Length: 333
Ligand SMILES: [Zn+2]
Image (cartoon, rainbow, N blue to C red; front, side, top):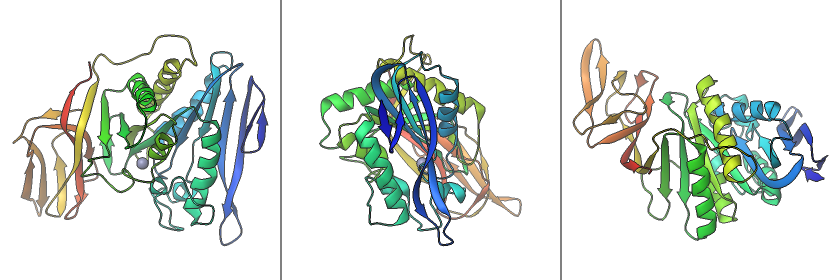
């Protein structure tokens, strides 16, 4: 028998419940949903977390759907899913919550006496640390950006080779085309949260192999990317020995070893000329900014780029991120 957040679940049982994590000013309780699918036979525990950022839905939705569909006799071990880790930000349909303006993916391992977001992170992570053999943390790009699914694995100083090796195997098995590896000993150009207090980093530091699945666009439910998440979870379960069958991988996988955001100089309306998955040469036209019908700025690629994500929302101000690109990549043979 398992005990997860104080709820008892037997082998061969599925449980859906909510746990209280705090209360709002008008005394409404805030709760997070938890799904435990305990396979008939014992084995590893794969923890799947989603919506650390409140508008990032596809991966969570896929994990949720998969636990409904997967027979408990079809796998060994346990799936634990926390699909809405950040209910405050989820309620705001935003990356961060309006209650304390914190980014939960900078808040792990949390603080039981900290701000609301830090307290939720603490409740969640304390339980995760007890149970998880491995973690998939689902994100998406922010709401204005289109992207194909991609994975991200971090090389964190001090993490042992065995943990990194398993994390790499999981990432590869997940089975998406574009895969980033971010070396935190020398990382630049990354957004806050990529480098400290992120759930995957905290797990790796505690010896729990982890990576992030970035499943498309924020604020949307996109069926192909939900299905990619479901396939990816089952691939990782096969890699971890939780499930029989072949790992389903695309013909081509790309390993991106350097990446960055590109920002625009002028404001106005944007016409994007590239799409996620494009590989473009230095000097290629990437986008036009126009105002009163005139093109006021044209951005050309400063180097060779792999387009990971591209802005969809056409309204831009100075400094807005317009694309997320790989600047160094190779075939992952
Ligand atoms: Zn995110």
